[in-house]
Image (cartoon, rainbow, N blue to C red; front, side, top):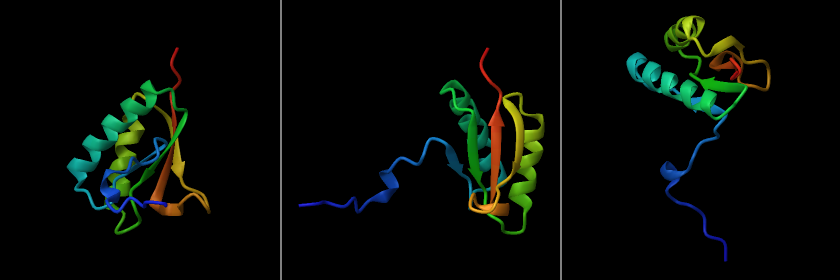
Length: 96
């Protein structure tokens, strides 16, 4: 017999991405900073930030933060099949 998890709130999201949709700017920036630190410490090279399309305010603020974040090597808009304008792909700096 197969049991499905009815409470999906306890499921762990993919480690290579962070979901920031529907958060306030302050909540999103705090969560993003913690996630980037955790991803760097885990040795990840590339991660996805899911911020959604909406009015673009969250995307803009997130990218302003990424531009000055010491662990971010580069970032770009998601391509077709990656989430497009609702996603930002980040290349993290490498540990020495």
